[in-house]
Every structure is written in structure tokens, then in C-alpha cells.
Length: 56
Image (cartoon, rainbow, N blue to C red; front, side, top):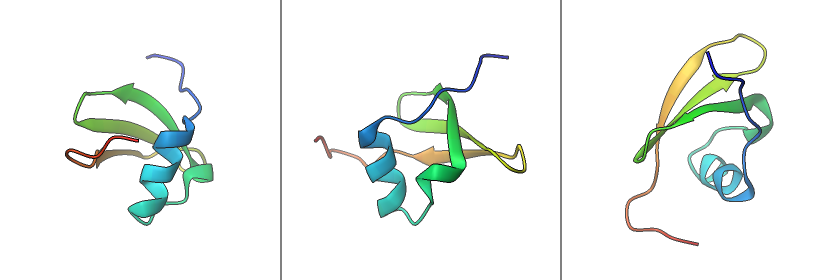
């Protein structure tokens, strides 16, 4: 498995807008339209959709 990476500023903003705490997650994979994230404390994996048509 790949080493989890810290989130970028844009990813942190996106997660905050969706109601997640960005400090609690690391990114495993960027799947294009989705992100596969790893929760630091529980090692749970979640898929989060990226907003459509929204560029910063």
C-alpha cells in the first residue's frame, strides 16, 4: 500500500465544506472524481466525492 499523504489546502477546504474535519484524515489515492482518505485514529477508509465544476 502507498504511504498516506497530507492533504493540500484545496482538499482541506473541500472536506470542511462537506462537514469533515480535515485534521483527522490523510489521502491514500486521488481517483479523479473522488478521494480515498484514511482516518488517522481508526484506520477507516472513506471515499469522498469532489465537487463537480468547482475550481479554485
